[in-house]
Image 1: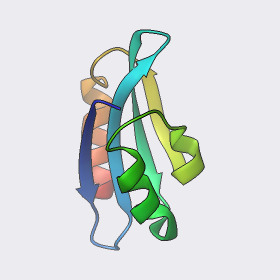
Image 2 (image 1 turned 30 degrees about the vertical axis):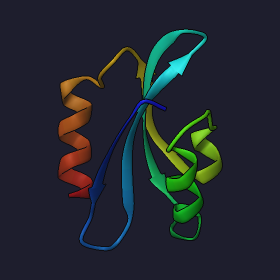
Image 3 (image 1 turned 90 degrees about the horizontal axis):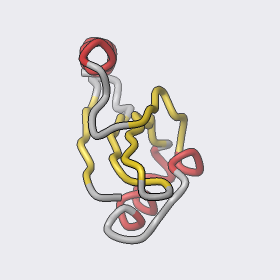
Amino acid sequence: MSFLQKIQSANGHLVYLVRGKDSGKPLWHYVLVDANKLPIFLKKIEGGSLDVADYGKVLYSGWGENPPEEVKIFIEEKYS
């Protein structure tokens, strides 16, 4: 995964925007990471590939470099 952004909510849940590639095509995922899996997730994203669904709930995902603006706004309002 080439890029990671974290949004932390007041209730302690962690939401990450993870950008990467699948078969050479750019994609992104917003993932609500399980607190008990966070250390492994953070280590795994330093390099290599991973299935983000193994570390929590995928809230939204899509093809391209960036999520649509309405998805960004929704995530920021709900989880910030």
